[in-house]
Amino acid sequence: MTIISSPLGEAESKLAGEALQGTLVELIDISLVAKQYHWNLVGPRFRSLHLQLDEIVAISRAHADTVAERSVAVGVNPDGRAQTVASVHGPGTGAAGWVADKAVVQGMVRILRASGGRLRERISALSEADPVSQDVLIAVARDLDKQAWMFEAQAADAG
Image (cartoon, rainbow, N blue to C red; front, side, top):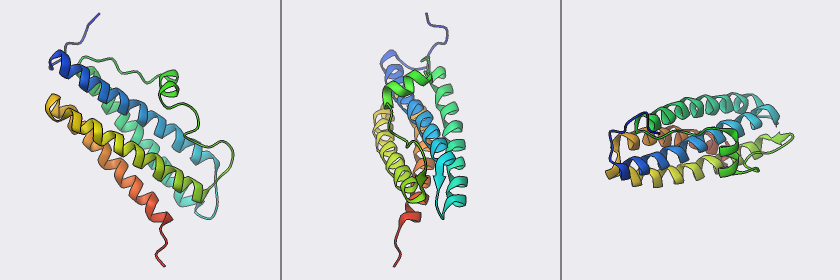
């Protein structure tokens, strides 16, 4: 049953829907991992990282909403259910128990850089099919790249 029509052709709508769905799942996963780290973080950089993790959660949730709404606008149902996120990313993207600040920084850099790489592939795939959805993903990539840089700067040895 199709309730919302797409402004795109069938092939373009399918491509955009897949790119948006992949991004939606990643954003939900990032927000969950960041909250897990946020609750279990220990170490000398606790306060600054605790606050930065909340920023990641807020950014991820805001972009997830935009991505899901764009998906609906192109006639594709978004799926942000826990079972969908778990089936795509599976367990192990965060840590259970106390996590040292250094491990949090390394984990977030790894997660954000990997996500950025997948986002760039989706952005490239949408250049012809749907520049509007591409623009949504570019905004996500910009914010995640900025957060990755900020985490990475905390791990740098300037000496």
